[in-house]
Length: 166
Image (cartoon, rainbow, N blue to C red; front, side):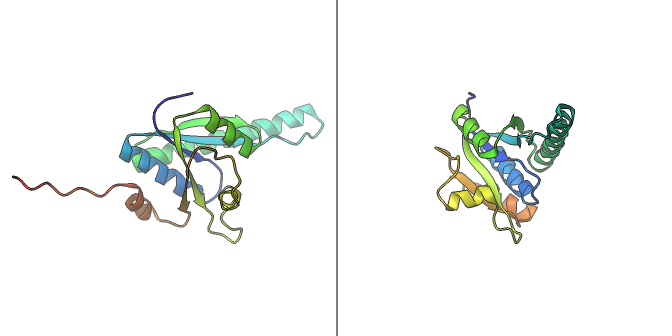
């Protein structure tokens, strides 16, 4: 369990994922908080050949590491923040729930809603149905179609005007 105040983004290969990451990174920077990215490697369905299973698992982990590297690059570029990458192997919702139970520093989960014909995505849909692994943690849903400028405007507090001398 860690201390502090952090935003959690659940990493995936969806086009809208980087909108959630950018928003969370900018909010973390604005308040001096942390940024965590959960990358879950789903269990491999056994093919029955241990060498094939091991190869599939290794490839899945490599893909997760590559996505993690892109997360670090994006968060640094957009907000000067380096996220803590958390790799887990298991079923997505169970791993989210477990992490939220273990890490009290996570105060918000940030997800982006899908913009395609498939709807907002399974995690966002679970919120609307009152389901999901969220527990005590509020979920922020970022529209996946927002531009970088839109995300900056939403995530960064406006500059305060100088106070009058007096």
